[in-house]
Image 1 (cartoon, one colour):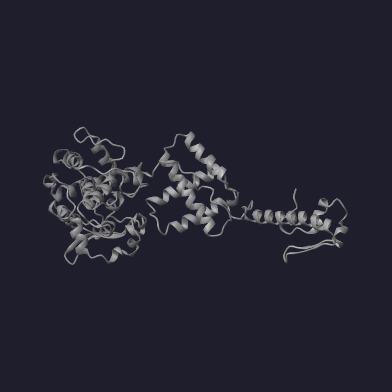
Image 2 (cartoon, rainbow, N blue to C red):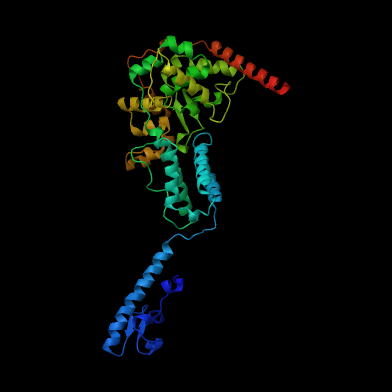
Length: 416
């Protein structure tokens, strides 16, 4: 095994084998690499010194390269680093949305690799993890999701000086497999017309979240969980302009006020809100329960069933509830709304910016009047929403029945 001292601080005595004689050569040749001094007595010694200097320089270079390699241990285990990473990301990511995915990916990887010292994780380990997911026939988008989280995790470890290493997860993404969040398709006008055709819609979407959720999404671009988790206190007027005050966003940029579209006002949304308040409820959809997947689960499932129904028949793997965000942004673009107003309305992250000037757009300083004008440019040509009005009392009664049923179920379970 090579002596590490030899690699980092070689001396003349380490190269006597090149001379074929005893260490007394020190009396005839003096080499000081630091100051660039080589002293010899004869021409033969000068030739021999040249080989020695070259060997010493190579040894020193090898020592420098070795110093840049990751050590076998840094003193921090994967579980400890993962906990610290998650604690930091909690300040910017949604506890109900993205954070569970981050935790799940890190748990799965640690279960595969073991709770090793972070410095012991090499690209080959992450590569083997990727191969395992491929063998399990995981979707390419899912595999890339895992690799993106792992890349961010190891960047965190490196940036916070927990370890000196090259990021072992970088460069392993499957080409052409994009994240689902950026690959959903918008609904066409014809599809919007079929989705909101009064007959099928009123027949199938009888609960208030089933009814109002897709409509709000179609006229705001809000995410499903942002809608389903609204309190009645999140809907209020500001200088005569009624807004959705979205406070539980996926990212910091998602926290925003969105003026309520005139079409929602025409359909009686504020009458529904008043009826819910008068009934003494704090949530806009009081019958919903905050479950593992948040408040949105049943609403999104009902909407998916509605899309699949023969009288709607919008069957496309990339057309789901989230497609309304893409639909709204596309429609606003078509109406000539500028990028700053669009991002303020739908709560896009800053990484969606398209020019350096976008860094200077601060959504909180955009006026509600301009935002209201922008949102009301959103229109679906040829789609008639007029037949979707429902008396608020119908929904209040449905909520009352649901809550009574849940209360009875709770009592029965307690008694049983």
